[in-house]
Image (cartoon, rainbow, N blue to C red; front, side, top):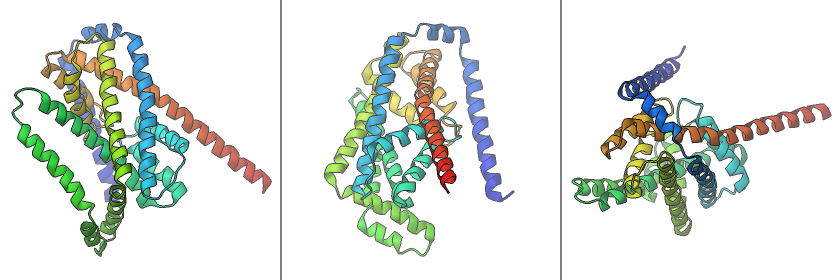
Length: 320
């Protein structure tokens, strides 16, 4: 076994240990009967609204991805991107990392446009604009709360992050990177070149960022539906601060698809705002449950794609 394979296996087992350890620790903190009682009170009318909002998110995100690709000279059909996005979401639910679906999206687009750099750039920029919107919503909501001690630090960190992106995607930075003799560095330069192309179309870029904000606000609204389904009275202004922070923890590559980290974050922040760990964990279970429910659609599309592809291959083989 190669050293790379050993390292990958060790990292995978470390993630498993983190996920299992956090879940075990959570269950030592909670009253399971109270958690089950909380879940039994679910008002399914709010979950139906949440499901419709989640379906709308697919259209929003796919449209944003479509705009990103188009601004880099890659023309793709929106229905194909919607299908690819849904299948990617399904795969992410069963792979050890939340980025597994993104790899599928990159490969699916590359299979049509034959440009790995542009395919990778589109998915990365889709993610980056989503994180930017998530952080921005959290920052704005935090700054509107009274007597927050870290306002200057938050503002400085935000400005530095935006400035850093503008610098690394500038013509000068890309020219320096492309002059490197290291192949990997030049590949990064190609990705940054696509980022520069996105910036050159201000109207499209503004629309992409707007769609990112709508998408992330929709996530907060969906979580508001979950809290209402559980009969929890949490102001929307508070959710605007804690939900982005909770979802940002899922990006951390320290567990299996955010398992354990996400639930711990819900428990921690719910206690912080005066609720119980059980209530936070109940909302977290609704989040993951609805993801798997929506993932069934992506799984169905994947199955249909495989069946159709196999039927086409059989038909071609039969004619030859």
